[in-house]
Length: 319
Image (tube, rainbow, N blue to C red; front, side, top):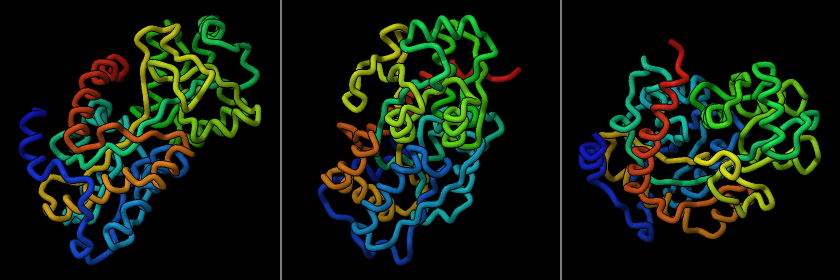
């Protein structure tokens, strides 16, 4: 399936990162559909990318948050828009599992989306409310096992990145805490700060200011190895081998969109990602760019994520 899509949807690609996009391709502003709420890492990355590509396209790029139901609401809005290439979409970790989490969702994460570029990646941080009597992973796991379902974990919609992070942690640690879904990650973090939640695994973009203020306590990072973005924190995998998760973002067009429009957006995106000013804006919110941000790399990454997460989703899906 993936190879067939790569040929059908990727005839335009790869795009040259150094050739400037042609401004005359677009005669009106572009829309960037962001399928999550405001202030989460994908929202922030989307807005940085929008700012980075609009001078290269010669038109404004207007971010539009359409959150809900594990990104499916935003993805459906993306597919309702005219397929003239002027509406683009930024997907994240829940993109590969949308169909697995919501079987009635009518769009396929591979065949109905054309990757243009890998735009960002970020390790998540496992943090607890200061009232939780744990300062490291072993003591946290012991506390969670003692509390059972009474412990709670703040999460976004089913299938969202931090939901998957929590489910993987639960499975590998043998704990049974309750995962509480929120419409947006920012709401879950707010309740964690207020003490209504015990823990979460989410973006350092949101949580590091709260950690620095002492309102949350960091325990570990979600990446397989220690992260330079979060120095001093051990990886969850140091206690739970096999645990590895980073948040990521991919920019998409749709199959059938005009080739010049797809090419222009892809070239502008790769040029923006090579711009030191754009990279610094991302670094300041704890986001790294990819060594290979190309469309081909994005397709491979999504295929790998589908293969990895679909069995996990199947185990947690109701019924």
